[in-house]
Image 1: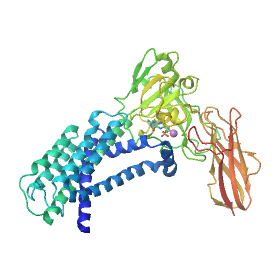
Image 2: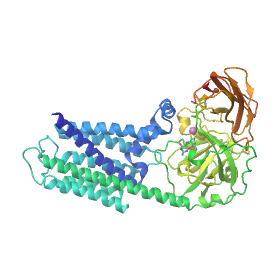
Image 3: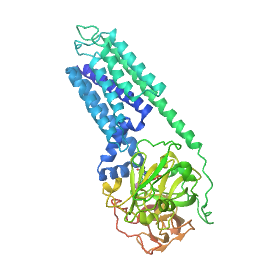
Image 4: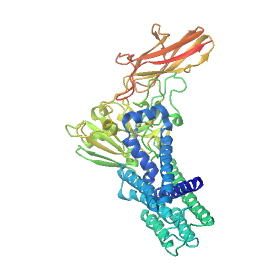
Length: 549
Ligand SMILES: Nc1nc2c(c(=O)[nH]1)N[C@H]1C(S)=C(S)[C@@H](COP(=O)(O)O)O[C@H]1N2
Ligand SMILES: [Mo]
């Protein structure tokens, strides 16, 4: 009894794996965003209430995405096992899992911001394959349905199914419509060729399971290979990009800047809602500037490079960063200045918001006034001397010094719409975050590490402070809640970059706490009240405790 239940659950899992593999293969061939797991994940990300999302980022950091996909896979496995068990009792119940899956997958794929009707096909095909297999595979312990194929007919059906998927994969051009009906058809075609009396033999069951497993592995491997080819292709086209020298180079960093001033690209934080990193083809990339403008324009990547690039050191930070958190970095960015482009388009009276849209459907709204006030807002194409990495927005992203990323730094940008704040709420604004979000002044202790155990004697306490576009005027340190003492500020590139600071501390033995606060260029000092990032950035002083021996 238990063995049969387990076998039925296993069958459910196997069949679901086959369905997912087929869906993944189809999606990879045509549209990676339409892969059901990723689409459902994306829908969960977009649909999750802000506090949940916040909590996930805070608790899991950059592991939030793998964990989300893992969770969805687990839920899927549970559903699949239950479906397998239910189908053993009542074959019609075998439709339950595939139906739920199909509806969720199709629904998610079609409600993605950049969806097209064809995006429904991978999930549909996957569900159809799973349903067909579960219906026509002889299941352990279930008396064969009247139309259950016998041992001879069935493997043919299954075998063709697998090779059908493989062919679509290796060609890479099979229309998204082919796999679904195809897989379904073979399964159905194999059935009815003969009736059988008892349950299937053990041999039949094992052979069928092996065939389905082989087909699944084949389809899965096909999807993986295809995926790697696409990724390699994209990498080659990125490597072929040659960025021109800036018309306006960054000033050399002043003497006395300490190591770590610029964040190495590989270490630069990444925050976005994209479950798969978009890999846009630079040759077909276009940016459309439209809306409340006199002269809408569309520019290519080459057009953009022709616009006289500026190169600037700019610190970018995330509104979700906790006090003392890691979501901040400084890079040398290269890009086309945005203000001249906007002015040339002729902004109509009354427009106050620029909405940037990305390839995968993010929207980021920025005050037009801010973009035109003389700061170095840009359409960035380069980061630390190379084309943008895919994860940071290749081929083009927006950057607005002084604003949090969600309010001025759209990655993978393909559209700029001039509009009003009354007319449109961008992605995060719809989820309760502030419409306008200048960065809050922040400071962080990087050395010593929290909870460090260090020998008594002179210690250099060090860290960074940032208040982009206002600049940092002072940093102070307080030991054990004592008086605030001025820290030394190292030279920095501009008011748009963070400032490194250090403080010489003669550390006496015992447990201690260190606290830091900064004052920005307007003379405002960081408030002491602790507030979480929602809705417009965290406040409070970074504090660490440590032990001096
Ligand atoms: N297309 C797109 N752009 C985006 C986001 C996103 O989710 N999608 N996240 C924004 C947020 S919240 C931040 S903090 C920055 C982070 O940029 P980075 O990943 O290059 O550090 O990108 C911004 N641009
Ligand atoms: Mo962010």
